[in-house]
Length: 370
Ligand SMILES: [Zn+2]
Image 1: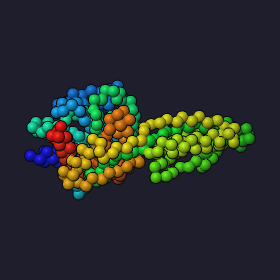
Image 2: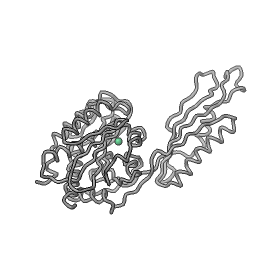
Image 3: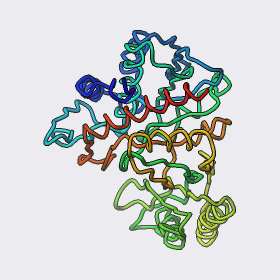
Image 4: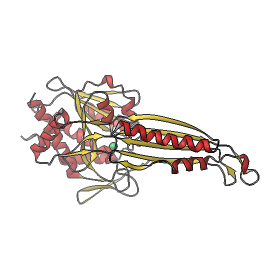
């Protein structure tokens, strides 16, 4: 039997619909973690949970080199009570919430593949290491906390992208975060404004003089949150800013961050304000080449099933950035998720099925070519 034909579309759909109805906004993953640990155990995996809630499951297989299969269990934002609806083969959320296909579709694809392998004992596959992370939507927090020395995999796949099935994300940028506090001086805005230093004005001047948005083909920058002030008639003494810069080029990224920091320091100096700037590298850029194992294996599986291989450079980070930095080359594959992080989020049932068909094909081909 063709391994791809062992994928059960109805079962995969049922798994997905069940998963999106278990609430798991970032920071609230206990229930879904328990659910997933149980399912992975039922499929013959040994399951560990680390200190922050990441799940690491392992399944024995043929050959020496374990393959990492990764997805994240948290969903973005604070949406609870997600109700999926299906119209013309596409799953949406009912109402104003996200759907959570980012990244429950990745988990569903992995679970369906494991279920097929569990049923079809004759199908060979390499040893598998499944990591389902928490807190991915908070700057890859869970994967960053994970002790990577626990991982045995030599290479792997992250199921956390959109696009047609066949998409292979082989490159993503570095990201640096900026957390800024501007301190001025409080004063009554009507009776003694000259005694105050307006932190909102300092922040505004700094932001206005920063290069932001699309900097070049490789580089972007953003100020995403500004908070400050107490009352109409108080000169505000404190503003906080949250921003970021991303680039595939490390030197350009460093230069962009320097310009943002300089803009803040210059504006503070003009007004005798002070500024505290925390700059943190969140993740590192990577590039996986077509001859590297995950890229080549994914391409072979897609070609076997007749899907066009679509190499893609991503503008966003995934847990893959973290695993690659830890020495485990990965590519990120599409599950068909679309318009993620919005209430228009949706996914075609057929895309998830095709993603699972590709995964099981990939694993069986890999074991057969060992
Ligand atoms: Zn995601």
